[in-house]
Length: 149
Image (tube, rainbow, N blue to C red; front, side):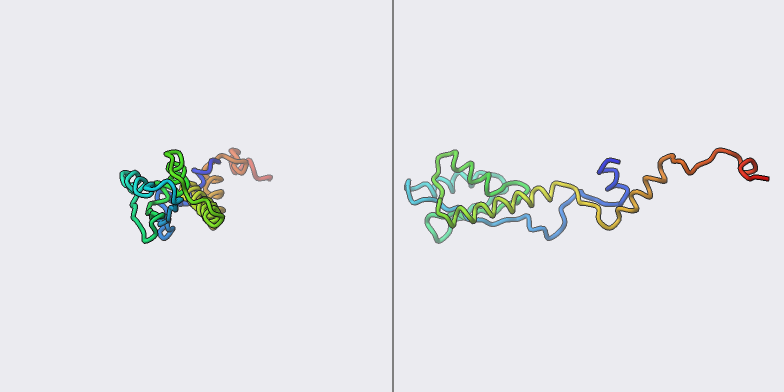
């Protein structure tokens, strides 16, 4: 039985993410001090992206971004900035935070796009599937011929 069939028989609907999943993220992108003016150029470049909100912070080497995990991830944003020639902060602390955020967002995206697993109603799926298929419990012999006299 295909997974989708099992989910439909169990009455599960996977059309939308569960409420409260926290798909809206607010992150900081930190830059190196050199070359000068790169934070301003990055702010202008990121502002044109749809559904991405970019703000300046009190820190002159930092930008705050807000986005949905379904649209963007911090990893894709930072990779795009690196490819465009921007120098991002590479301190040990930044690398650790970055690795944790990348992992969490990737896991959350994977969980949101994959169907829910059957946990509580899985037995009902197999009962319904058994009822819909021909199986060995059916005997075509008439009742009077089945009984021994």
